[in-house]
Length: 331
Image (cartoon, rainbow, N blue to C red; front, side, top):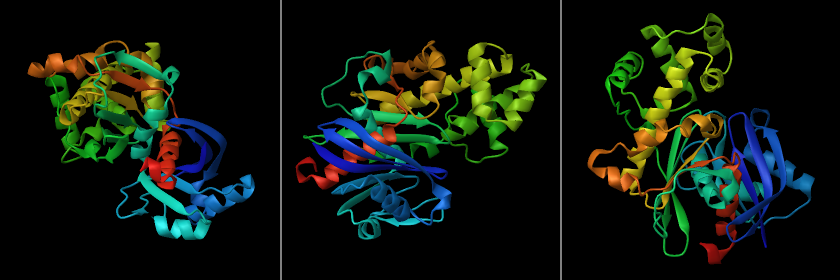
C-alpha cells in the first residue's frame, strides 16, 4: 500500500488528506479542512497538518485554482505564489506536484466507486478510450483523460472559456442579452452557478412569472441554490424555465466536448452543481441536447454519459497523482 498526501486548495478553504492507495483504489485515512485566507501560504497549512497527524509522506499532490506552468501557480483568489520546489523544501515532502484543481477532479473520476456514479446513457465504451470530464460550479471546468498505453493521464483545458453556442431562438435571445455585459460570451457565463442566475434574470426580464419572495431570495442568498431548489420543487415558473434552459445548454456543451475529444471512453459530468440537480439531468433535457449533433447523432448514442455524485473527486485525483509522483513505476 502507498500512503500519500492529497490536497484540494480553494480560495476559501483547503482540504488535506492522507490517502492509502491500492492501484486506482483510494482510501482517505485522515482529512482536515483549513480556512485558506487565514494562512500566509500552503506550506504553513501542510506543515500544521503533518505535525498533527505525526506522519511522514514521500509524495504529495495539490489541486490548485489556476493554471500550473512549469511547476508553479499564482492563485487568483489568494495572495499565494506556489511552486513545487519551494513547497517540497518548506514541508520536507520529497516529491511535490501541483495540478489544476479541475484536472485533479477529473483524475478523481478514476477512483470514484460505481455507487457514486449515475448513468444517463450506457453507450458502448471503447477499451482505453478517451474520457472527457466537465463540471459546473463557480465556473465550468473541462479536462480530458488520455490513455498512454499504461494508464490514464490528465490533460487540462480551459474549454469553459470557449464561446457559448446558442441553439434555438430562446438561447439566441439569451446570447444577445448577455452580450450587453460580456463580449465575447463564454459558455461558462451560462453553464455555471452564476450562469444559472443570469439565465433566471434574463427570463424574468423577458416576462417569465416569478414570486416576489423568490426574486428577493435570488438576490440575497445563493442564487443557484435558490433557483434549483424552486425548479426541482416546481414552485416557481421562472426557476423551472431557467433550470430547463441551463440543463439544455449544459448537455449541448457536454456533447460539444465529446465531439472535440472523441470521448469514446465516456463523458463524465462532475462539479458541485450536477449532484444537486440530478433529477433534472435525468429527465431527458440534458441527454437530448447531448445527442442533438446532426450527422453525428448515431455516434453520440455510443458515448457513455455519467454523472459523478462523489464530492471529493479533487482529493481522490490528487491522491492518484501523488502516487504517480512518488512511485516511478506509476509515471
